[in-house]
Length: 290
Image (cartoon, rainbow, N blue to C red; front, side, top):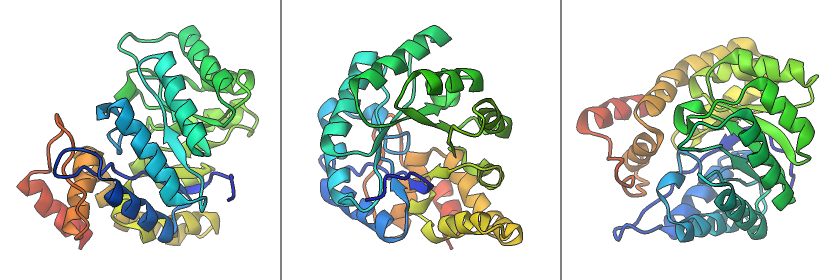
């Protein structure tokens, strides 16, 4: 397996069965489809995977089932962020033990963390595991905003903090990461609507749930940018953009699960307090999926 993490990093949803528990068979099928249709990496247990609504046993089940389903064909990046440093370390160690390539850590906190607290949090996680860490900046969901200066500082201080997923939708953040690190810190786009600009500006990959519904345009967009075919990349992006905006605005677990059902690959409803997409949303999504 190549451990280079690049390209389309696909975020699977977490399927739930009729009893409300993890449907491991459906998860295995979904992950296998994502790999077979060309995803360059798989990233379970992010926002799309409803990690915030899982018990620790369920978290572990998803880690094990995903790594097993991938079977070493592409890298696996496990979302391991949690409210406490101790449980983030527990999750990161579980991912490492199961065979994950890397962990992605979102600094989630009820109290707004300052830079010293964030840096100490990541340093403790880095010291506890031997696999790479992707620092995940998404203040809209975590309430914590990490500046480019802090991220580059931690890149230098924490040996295995080797990459950043930037989801603010601010291209200047990515450009600052590149400038401040002298081009040494790989950054990945986590804002679907920004993807064309981000890839064109040098993002190493695109972290996205869109391949659950439309894998080929995602792959084609990445390939076009890599080939320097800006005209083709723009055409692909313009066709894909309405779907990208819709799934983000409607909430990724609800919209992606609804889309999979519309495509004949239902994986259950999202977990409360999230609700299934309403009838108007399903009608709009059906049109976007063609």
